[in-house]
Every structure is written in structure tokens, then in C-alpha cells.
Image 1: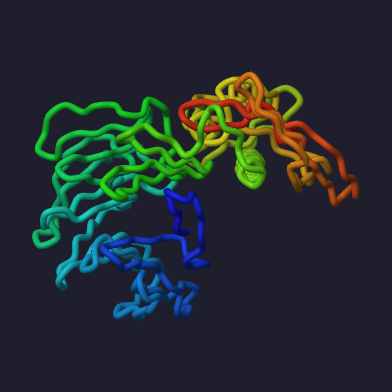
Image 2 (image 1 turned 90 degrees about the horizontal axis):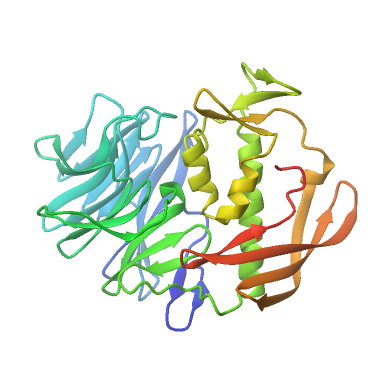
Length: 365
């Protein structure tokens, strides 16, 4: 997507792709060319942003590909992460994943996590300086989960907020004091400033603290509806994530562990939900009889949530901003029961964004 900050206009540049990198006036994105042995054969396509002309991938591999710079390829082969530049490759015998990286002053910096799948951030992780020529790495910032660079400064996400720190050392400084789920957040350096993007639609300038969402301004209907869709989808994902094998019986319910790292502990589940929901909503949700913390791990009741869970939010009927809250009347439709109804959704302003404070859960609670 391309977002014009001055006009607040959002345009689609490319569909069916999930990663982009921009350098100067060139857009890089992955393209699937074929399949082999059950794996996608992919490569990085270059698009000239001025002309729209595209240059097909010169290198193709199985799995997935990303570009860190126009001359550095971050790719996957046989389920291992590798980084290649000038025919030299950085690769580890042990499992390693890269969540974000940048090339600055002839040096490669990346957030690397040496945890196994479904053990995210349990092993050593943080911002590393990667030496591709020598196939080694040096830890610079411990516990960072996402990063970007502005000039001589790292901007990075930790479990409890966004920080910045000089690349040559010194103390870190918190610049956004809110827990953030890194898989639902992005740091972009645009027009001289660093921006935090979230899956809730928030775009926050971390240097000026100016957000695209204002406390005294009502959201557009389509923006509100998208927030409601995102929120309902997250509640559905939590319910569907319960592991059905080896259930634990407590009272009237059998509970399955939420093994996905973004739901697995109380802290990570609350952080994930905070992308879309207010603190009061989350506090109430965590008291649900369907959620249970057992031996430090979150579990969810196994079972059919009922026909109400098929209810969809279809359109915003009306909305009013009053006393710091947006109260929206939303049309819902349940195709299982063939019923159309009107429900109320309430938004409040927290941490430079509008989040849902109250909404019907339709059995997803």
C-alpha cells in the first residue's frame, strides 16, 4: 500500500504480496513463480516507482525471499535462514530467524532470534551486527524484537515499548511507553522521520509523537469497521489456537494450551490484544471462564462456540464522538441463523490510537 501523509490517501500498489522494501525510487517485493516438492519457488521483483516498470527476479529459491538492501538477499532454503551478499553467505548450524534488518554505512544490522519455532524469544535475541564475509555476528542490543535505523541511531521494539539508542553505544531512551506485539507492528523510516505502524491502522511519528488518529476527531466509518473486523478476527484466532491434543480438565471445561507465542503467556496475550483493545476490555476478557492460566501458560476452553460466532459486522449505521468516546451503531448479520441486528461498539483513545473498549463477542469470550 502507498499512503500519502499530506492528503491521507491510501492506494494499492501491489496485491498478493506480503513484504516490501524501498530504496530510493525502487520497490522490491516477492513473487511466486512456481512450485516444487510442495515448496513455493520465489524471487524478488524490482518495481520503478516513477514508471511502474518491473524487473523480474534474477535469483529464485524455494521457501521465501526478502531483500535487506538492493544487493543483499535474506532467504530460506530447506527451512533455514540465510543471508547472501557478493556470493558470500551468513548461515547458522543452529536455528535462527531474522525479523528485521537494515544495511547502513556498509554494515548489516539485523534482529536475530536463535529460538526454535514456537519458542519465540526464549533463546538469545536482539540486534546483531552481521559479518557475511566471516559468517559471524556480534550482539549490540539485547532483547530487541524489531528495529530500523535513522542516521546514527537504532530505533527498536522491546516487550514494553519502543526505544532508541546511538549505534556507537550509550544509554537507551524509551520513546513510546506501551507494550507492542512485534508481529503486528512495523518501523518505517520515511521522509526523515521514524514511524510506527500497527495492524490496527495506527501510524505514529515517533519523532514528533503525531498520530494519524486524533483524540478529538471521529474516525471515518470504513476505518471503524476495519478496526472491528480486526478485533473480531483476533478473538477468533485466540479461540481457534487452543491445542486439542492433551487437554486439561478444570471444572466444567477441557482446556487446550495456546501454543502460539503471541498468546502463550498472560503478558504476551495481553500485549497482542492491546493492538486492538483497551485496557479495561482486556482486563475483563482475561477474567473469562473460557480462559485459564495453567502452569504459567494460557489455555482456552475446547469446544464449539455456537452459531453466534458466525455473526459478522457488516456496516457502520451511525457514530457519535462524545465525552472522549466514539459510540458506533453497527449492523451485524448471522448467515447461520439468517438474522440481521444492530449492535453498539465503543472506542476510546489510548496511547495515540483509537481502540475498542466494548463490543459484542458472540461467544468468543
